[in-house]
Each structure stands twice: as C-alpha cells, then as structure tokens.
Length: 116
Image (cartoon, rainbow, N blue to C red; front, side, top):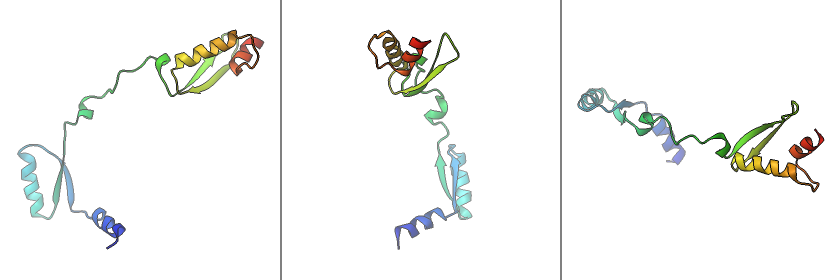
C-alpha cells in the first residue's frame, strides 16, 4: 500500500468526533458514541493561549523592528516611505545624520531637505 493511499484512508474516515474534555461528562458521552460506532478525540478547554490574550509587552513605535515607516516633511506635503529591519529610532537618526553631512551622495530624504 502506497503512503498516499494510507494518508487518504486516514483522512477519509468520518467516524471520529472531537469533544472538549469535561471530567465525568466526557466519559459518559464517549461510551454512548462508541456504542454507535464513533471514536472520540478530546480537546482541552483551558489552553494557555485562551487565557492569556496578549503576548509580549508592546514596544514603543521607535523601538520596533522589521517595519515599514513614513517620514513626513515638515515644510511641504512630501513624505518618504522606507523599510528597515533595525529599530526605527536608529534609522531615523541615520536620516538626520545624513542631512547634516556636507559630502555629496545624500539619501533621497537628505536631497529633499537640502533642496526644500
């Protein structure tokens, strides 16, 4: 028998029922369902992810990583959209530093600031 045939045979079975486990009640239901040809699989009601809804503490916007960010020009309606894997705060500092540089080869943000 091929492995694909074996997998199809398992997934085609309709005689399994999944129920939440509740002490005393679940065993009685299982006994009744087994009598009519069903097999019972239990699930757990009180999983930790159902109790704790928030994961880790939220980071302030300037400390987030792997984000797309937007810088608005203070002098016109232009904006710059960038993407960084580092902290947004670090990337913004680099933009500010680039604006203060005297040497050419400025970023798009710096060129806009110098022209505007």
